[in-house]
Length: 328
Ligand SMILES: [Fe+2]
Ligand SMILES: [Fe+2]
Image (tube, rainbow, N blue to C red; front, side, top):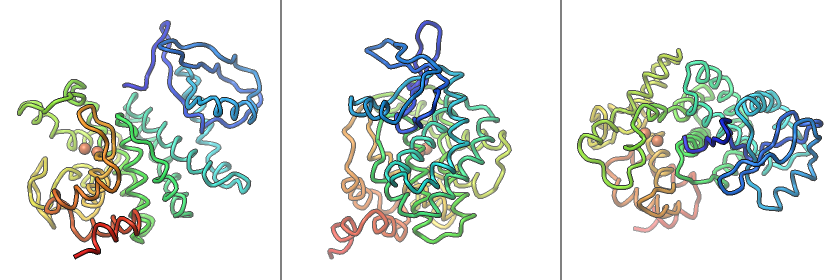
């Protein structure tokens, strides 16, 4: 896992600066990464003020590092504080959006580093809570989509697909229970990639037929991991297993067509393709959202659910809609 750093036998996890809540005292050693080294910057037990966090932010510090035990303990603490932070009237909505995005991202990252049944089970309750905030304030989801980061890391992809798919389903006025299924499926859809050889996942050139055959198994691997963690909802499993199926039958693993593919799988598929195109890859520059939507229109028209694609464009913004779909 790319985000995990090692130094002097210790393992460090990065924590977004957006997740630091001023605490007094702050019960964890704080490290900064300087070059390739982890440097102890602040001993545990010292108070951490809002002013100090702002100074770091102004210095351009985006993340601090905690060792494994402190990191897990701090995430637990943050999950307990989520409702207070989200309900805080004095906190600007941008800050809430960044907090929710980073916290879900940290959860996904932990799940990828430590893909045990317990992490997945524990994560479910947390994901449901995150979705409830998106349902209460749909503008929050839009804000998150605007500030998404696109990096070459699976956890950022899962995090982004989660926010795109849940916010899009809320926009589509799907009932809360259905949004929850889509949210859970989208956050877990690629965890099966953990079983694929990193050499295949990160290969900078085209996969050979054998590698491609292995890669195509990841939706089924994701489904197996969820079943093992007692996430057995039929629809959630279908979405996970069908997220690479395509309307024209050219997808995988089963080559299903149009209505054979669950409508929610088609929704997650669109968000997944869009996010992957906007992300950084070693062999190409990332597409802008407009370029990604355009490419989907010109080259993937038969692969996606066309009506849903149009809705997705409308959801992302009236500008995109008038540029891409209004002209004859
Ligand atoms: Fe996938
Ligand atoms: Fe994906």
